[in-house]
Length: 154
Image (cartoon, rainbow, N blue to C red):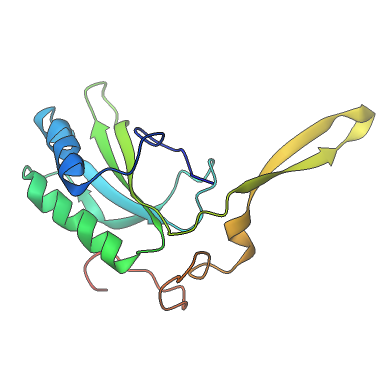
């Protein structure tokens, strides 16, 4: 199952040149960028792990792409996304968000039915990936120790 979250998620994966063009698009509008990763892609999991800090001072698309590449190298079997923030309305708002890396195998989700009082039925989305421990949720899963990096080797 192909996860479809964020801009461009219904399209084929972006190449590095296409990613650089999107980064340049965001920077020319004054939108700072950040890189995030996760192995829990549940649609309601909006708080992914940050790769370093948001890049408020970077204006060079190549420097941002270097951070994307470093995150993908460190977490090859995780979802990695780029977020662009727009503060023009007086608050930081995500103006653009797109995936730049996916695990080699995306197991997908199932709907769990929950029956409540008075014949009420609710559903919960359950990601198959979370049946395995963090750090081991996808094909190779890296070292498997669950260690996370802050993007600066720490």
